[in-house]
Length: 114
Image 1 (spheres, rainbow, N blue to C red):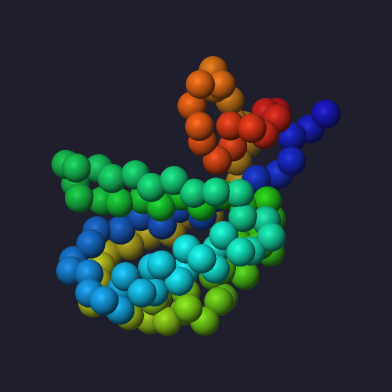
Image 2 (cartoon, rainbow, N blue to C red):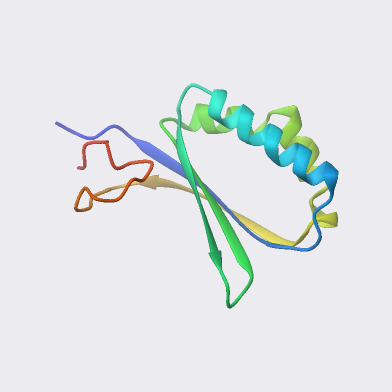
């Protein structure tokens, strides 16, 4: 049996200074993402040597991902990114395989691997 299709949207950035508006929008975007059918989870990683932070969102469809991308709160944050971020990049990908030893709790750890 084939594993269900999974997509990721990885948002990598370097932060400048966060303010109250950033924190409000960041929290609101997290709530919106978690409310979208098809949201599977997320992880955040930071590279201390470069200052880059990556948020990886997992989705069961491109349509679910698109709901977040086009949500008004996300669009508001995107239009103001230059005041909080020193640069960013987004990578959209399809997960081909996910596996492990079963001891790590991760967004895809309970899904069948292909």
